[in-house]
Image 1 (tube, rainbow, N blue to C red):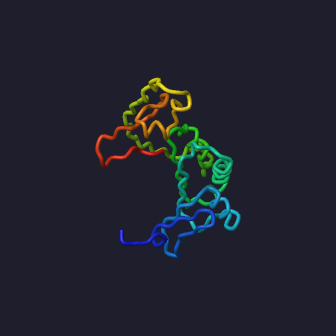
Image 2: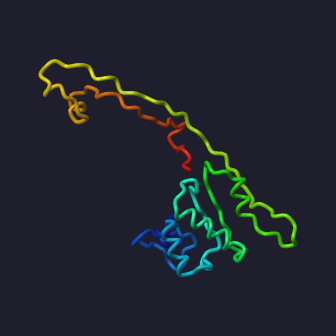
Image 3: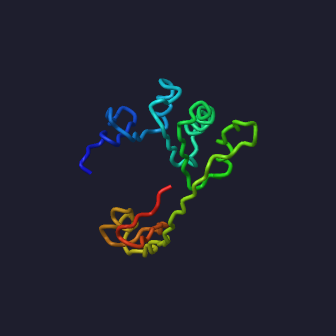
Length: 173
């Protein structure tokens, strides 16, 4: 793309804002969104809000979810998208169901399921250190001395995802 940050897509984090007057997408932290609510309770500047990684629950996210539950009936034009790999989607859909207009049953919010990819994980252990001859002071292993002397320090588990191609990346969620 031949655009700089802040033209079409911008971001705002604490003490830094790279958002232009023509920005269409604004990425921000949950704390920044809470601060915006204090200035604009109806969030009129936005037509869609995405809460990503909702399963990483925090007080901020819990407050925002409760706030949106009350805001959405007053802002039917506002679209709220909640993403998570591990939340119970049916429970969230029921929570965000809008009250029925004609006195009928509540209809849960729509659920869109996107299947992700999993990548095999291989667990490798470093070999155990071999005892060396010499005094105790010279045989003590640290990561720095183990690297220089090419001997291993006690084993530590390490998980490594092996990708199917050099261009593919594991899905984050």
